[in-house]
Amino acid sequence: MQCIDSSAKISPLAIIEEGATIGANVEIGPFCVIGKDVKIGARTKIHSHVVIQGHTEIGEDNQIFQFASIGEINQDLKYLGEPTKTIIGNRNRIRESVTIHRGTVQGGGVTTVGDDNLFMINCHIAHDCNVGNRCIVANNGTLAGHVTLDDFVIVGGMSAIHQFVVVGSHVMLGGGSMVSQDVPPYVMAQGNHAHPFGVNLEGLKRRGFEKATMHAIRNVYKLIYRSGKTLEEVIPEIEQYAKTEAAVSLFLDFFKRSTRGIIR
Image (cartoon, rainbow, N blue to C red; front, top):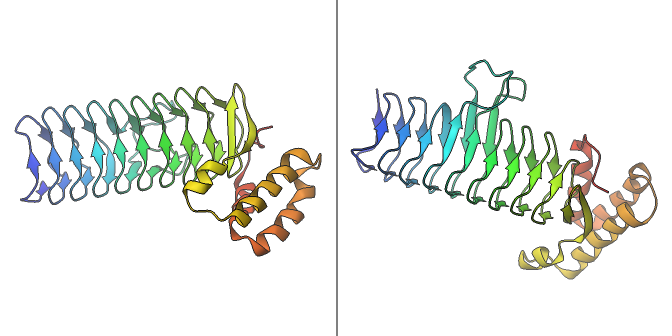
């Protein structure tokens, strides 16, 4: 049985399968296909020719543009039709031809997207990815399976991120980057393969970071990349910085989750 709020505006040319849940003031354009296990939150606008399938939950106030495909069967050959999920938060802008695939049992069973993200034209978010809040992935950006983007990450156009890579908060990846190892928080990186070239100070200024905090972050960057010491040697020094600058603790959390080694 469908559960469609009476305030929803649905084109007669859209296909809404039995079982779908459509929230208040949702708009669904012509030639869309909404699967039976899909839930769409209030005030989300879905433009024409969008396909949303699988066990997919989409929050409130999202905009999804033409030819996007969300929650579809992933491209992992191990996937055998299990009822895995795609969960998307609120106020995201998902532009034309973006693909976001459902998770796999082996990867935890869910692909997640947080709030206030922008995925530009032709981006791909593969199975079991975890995207935080306020990220931007520019045109043709590609996240392979199991990738994690923490909050406020910017991925430049035509960039590709390898499976299982973790990209820390406030990172900026330049266009055309090939990222095969983890990227620590606050770092700017670019290249094939991507290498670090400083701290994302302009981004931090725009987000209201104080000078003292940015100074501490830059000192930690120098410890990691210019001191000649191993990570094991610099972590105690980073812990000291974190006692007075809470923002530095993001480095410590990142290193606990990093499995592929960091870019150099």
